[in-house]
Image 1: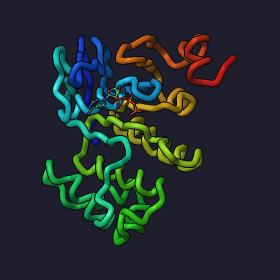
Image 2 (image 1 turned 180 degrees about the vertical axis):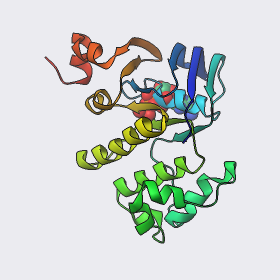
Image 3 (image 1 turned 120 degrees about the vertical axis):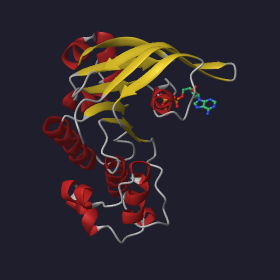
Length: 222
Ligand code: ATP
């Protein structure tokens, strides 16, 4: 990962037929920041990620990244019948990166698993493959959609620690999309809260955690 990636989303509107998934969303992530995007099911979080990566076309507004973007999609989306190594190599096709050795250096567990079929791995191992696949393109910005989905807390913490290390040591800019606010607040400096397609709160994680409405909705507070 090189440093310098940014995300700029301004007045973003995305519709599916007559339904509005994102309603004038504005957010930004500066170079080297690690920022969380929280929100309940259906809030529009994945739609935002998919718009950033060009899978979804906005009705109006903009969603831009400065630098190379990689996206770990919700549900990982691996090729289950291919080996771990082939999944990694496919992740590098756009940047013509075929050699996974730098990814194995960062995530040595993947080197041990490289001949295994992705489909037989545990959820945590599969998420690590998705993570490694995203790193194959040497991104400046990483959008992670639901890192913790379906994973045991210890596995999630281990993956989050890798993410933090990449952010601190290499300046990788991260947008962490999470329903698990405790995890997000533990590793990010700032957060945005998305509900029904709108940003309803934003700020430093410490401030958001002290906001009674946010605490009640996302931290199981009183
Ligand atoms: P989740 O965590 O459940 O994925 P989310 O916050 O990521 O939730 P999105 O998946 O972005 O939310 O969905 C936002 C809204 O858009 C929801 O009402 C969803 O039903 C709708 N939606 C998402 N994708 C499509 C699609 N391809 N066609 C029609 N509606 C869609």
